[in-house]
Length: 317
Image (tube, rainbow, N blue to C red; front, side, top):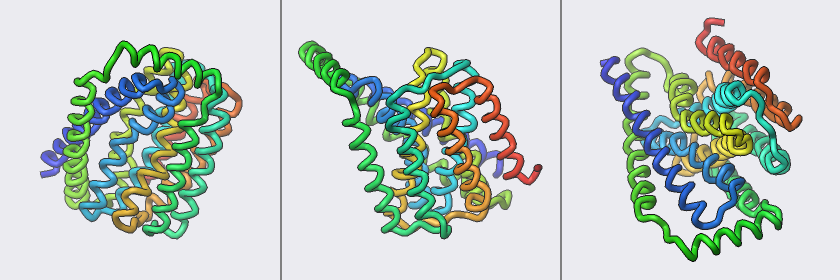
């Protein structure tokens, strides 16, 4: 049975990620049609779009009664995004440049969002009113991110939009891919959660621990692909903006929406190990990027820290 449910986990995770890829690709092209700037597409569409697997699996977990999956998934994903994905992207890209928009907007917003999350999670539970606060904070951030564009880029985007709109319509296939991807997200999330619950029961490991590592790393694969591709292409703003945007989305929206459905609990391992590591990784990332450069040696150290985190979580260290 363990092999069977392991196969279900892998297949459902693959469906979830592929569905996210379809949604993200369609959203990027539709966003470009409507005149979104590269910064907004990188931070808002890409950053949030790559977090769709976390959102889908978290909602499915709450519906299935596995409320502890949500916080573990989010905390584990944020740790993986910073230590593993940013680390690999920096090593692959050798040196990533941190643009002014990231310094002005995303670094302070990630710090504020992390404080918001800690303020509602310190007691090991997240109530519906607390979840509502997180969602409102996310909507404020989203509004500011969309309108945080300087006048010159805004004028250029408007000009490009008018030119493209005169020649194009939204491709019908993009809308089809969008809905096909959403369907795959729902299907993959449902069976992913069922597999996690079954595996947890068979091997006697808590749902939170599995979610903190296996589910978190699996659902972070879109971020990994986007960040590495962008880093290799020299698009540092997209590579790092994707991680900043995804982490803000995770701790505000991915926690907030399921928390509105049902109160959430934080399992012991996530509370004792996951959250402290997430805090340390987040502020280490902020300090690293404030220098306007993110070097490959820093990336290598981040990967090593992730290995140490896995060792500590598994009890090997």
